[in-house]
Image 1 (cartoon, protein in one colour):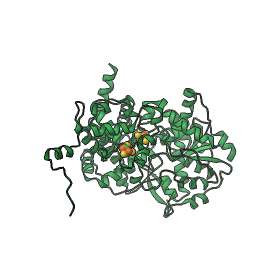
Image 2 (spheres, rainbow over the protein chains, first blue to last red; image 1 turned 90 degrees about the vertical axis):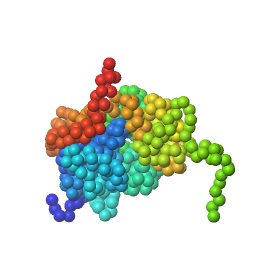
Image 3 (tube, chains in turn brown, green; image 1 turned 120 degrees about the vertical axis):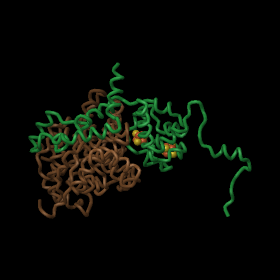
Image 4 (tube, rainbow over the protein chains, first blue to last red; image 1 turned 90 degrees about the horizontal axis):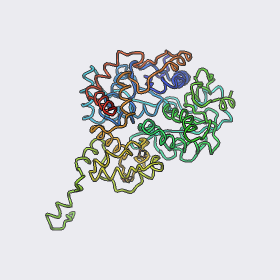
Length: 300
Length: 194
Ligand code: SF4
Ligand code: SF4
């Protein structure tokens, strides 16, 4: 590709490619318009899931995440990704192993069995932080790429947990009421809205969705109540697992609690895709459990 | 010169230095294991309750993160590991961001879960994820509906992960076997079925 494109190894994870492939397609196409080229990270696996997997044995979590990191080290390329859960595994293990010799030696002992070595030679970024970063892209460039502004829509931001928190180990600043995601939403011509307890978790993480679905959905339900209260037309996030929890979760909430919201849930890359003129078909929005029709009618 | 504070009583001094809790069911090593795995100074918790007050799981269950912190400090291993509430933490890190002692209660929970797995205490859904990753490389593998959708989008039916490059799967299995993870998962799951 052209010389002024920045290239990254695109770490896919599981839920984006295997449940919401529109997120993957959108990430590739929308980033291209912003000067970011995403290249396949061949042979990558699950990050592996920080809650369900790290909870059982942190050592295996370190080692399997390190294997994914080494694949990118071999390409000599930084990783970018579109999921908070993946960020927790891939970014955090990279960070820990770069700074903890004991853990790194342990990981390299097992990686040697598969002829690999963690060197700590690359960095890991969430695509959303690259978009926000003035040196890479920046809000103005995002705004300039919009051909179909999402005018007249109210959108509730969901930051999720594992990109920003724990804040002392991250670099995103305030986690009580951050506003940078709102800037990226407003850049698409939409109106971002504030709602009660914005920073609360979606309820899916830590293996809780699999362990106690009702408990997990009760947390989600509280967020949906708060989002609906301010009249949002859609929720947007940058984590396919949060997306699954809000999207499929609404069907489960209707069954279990009898509450119906019909609130479309869109990954920021899907939203950006729409704003850059992609069609709902090009984003596979029909795979969403909650029909996006009401939202699409406002913008198409 | 700094003044040394003491009671002039060697026996009392020694007792005051010893921070372990003595009871039949207390295991001081538990706190040490938790500290090592969590990489946080769990013994510094002063029980303010900010963590529980920040916790999305607390209002809808009997799960109290502060209680688990206390169990850690007191070495109440069995009480902590046998309580099913251990698995209700969503790992949202709200408690960690707000703890006035700068501790990471979330990582204490992760450490306790690791210790629980060592004594075969673990919910089945966690083990199923292990089996899926061992088999396919993915915790959430592809399926036919999704393959068809991918093709319509102009993407390959399977993503360029272990799904398209299964030759990487034996390496993943080797790593998991190194820690006997799959073996233990299979064993615990099959025992549960008896
Ligand atoms: S917030 Fe920190 S110091 Fe306070 S009870 Fe929780 S872990 Fe202990
Ligand atoms: S990380 Fe776990 S214990 Fe801490 S506030 Fe979140 S759910 Fe509660």
